[in-house]
Image (cartoon, rainbow, N blue to C red; front, side, top):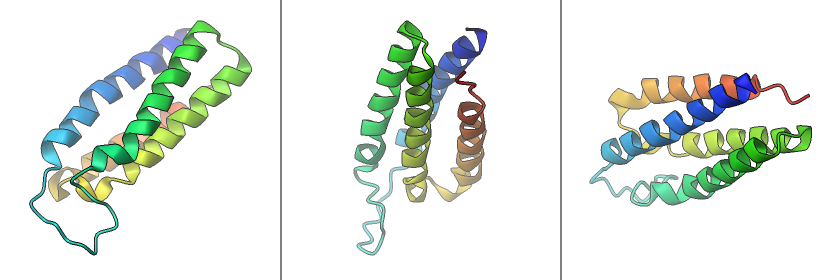
Length: 115
């Protein structure tokens, strides 16, 4: 239960801190048609995963079963993957910190013991 509270606080911090920072720093006047990532609507690319992760966290917090834990971990990893997909929208000066944060968070999610 203590591990769950730490992860929930970490998830809350990650969602409340990193996402607004991305929103403030990823604006670009570039409209390069060759870019795979469209940075004018980058939030659409990860918002569905953020909502799924939030829902899975709530379900797991209310019913901490092994199955719900697995769903929580999977949703967390999909959310991190979605955030990685918008790396091209992060300004170059912030990219290393952004990637480091994602790697740290991925390690925390992978460390959740669902048994």
